[in-house]
Image (cartoon, rainbow, N blue to C red; front, side, top):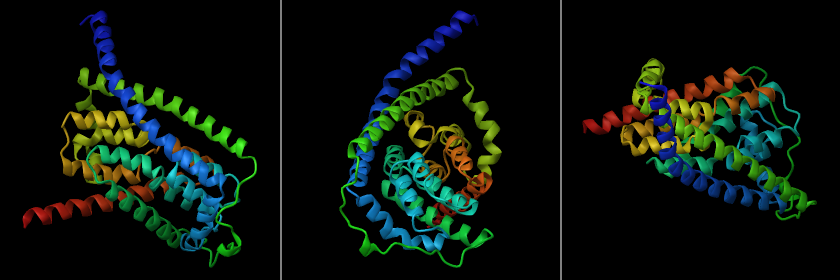
Length: 317
């Protein structure tokens, strides 16, 4: 095979991948813009702060101060960066950052990422429920297991003292900040989603996908995942569900994975993904990275094997 032939094949694959990749990018960006704008409005009107104060008493069970609720709520609806932005204004211990980081990575960008998983065939309601419950369960369990558990969390702000509606100062500054962050995120989406989709198709074109599957087959077997999901597992772990959306959807169109296996995969990667960039960011904020990673891996392994058991019981009836 000549170099010209290889380059010609690569060029053809890139040309074929581009239209679908850009279509997915527009879809992802539209959802991101809507969700982030709604959150901007809630923040500007003071409603987001009221919501955070309202749920803050629950954070006693996670061993976190009430003000950490704003970081969690921001991450839950937007992304990990929003959580980190709020977290940077707080004085949290290593223990607290580890718990908050684990909960946030298990359930962040919920609306957008659930939409991506729904596109692959998994119920949106299932994604919301399993990720939210897993996030809360991880918070409770880590609070019980990790040393240095606090007996109480003081200084909770009474909800009656917080107005539901309170126009924030410098709304123009908040809007500019929101717009710049959205444009920056859009640029990252354009580059990463497009390039990743091309890489995926190149791997198939040159027969490398099967080799990748063989390498990760033993680890996936421990997790209870079929070898056919290896590439999507790698994508989700390296770049996450949002950036990996085009590759994930393209894989679905190949019909190489059945519905049950997709539900198993989505159970796993919904709770445990973005284990490169996002995990590194939270580790830089003071979280213990291996606890954040391994606790979620333990949780998803139990959930996936329970789901497989459920399928077997239902099939035997």
